[in-house]
Image 1 (cartoon, rainbow, N blue to C red):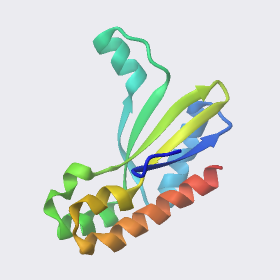
Image 2: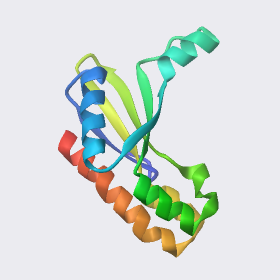
Image 3: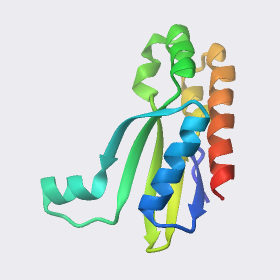
Image 4: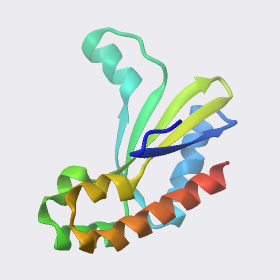
Length: 131
């Protein structure tokens, strides 16, 4: 069972194929990718440790981010909406999405509620299209 701060979907494709599909679907929902962290490569380089293929995409919808920052200047510590691509098997990738309602709800600022809801709806649409 997924934690309240995330929701997941498993895709029958490689991490590369799933990554391309996720990027296209996020773009269709108004999100761009600000950052991409290849955790496997980073751990190999920095710690000489092996880890399964695992990538963190920092997805941002500029309009929603602008509204959130205007309502709560410190919200930047909780942005962007991270999406994780995690290797399960050669042909299965788990995609983990940050749940904006849970994460942005930590502020107790009711002005953020509709922003979090919209971000959540858009991310859930991406997950639905994947699986």
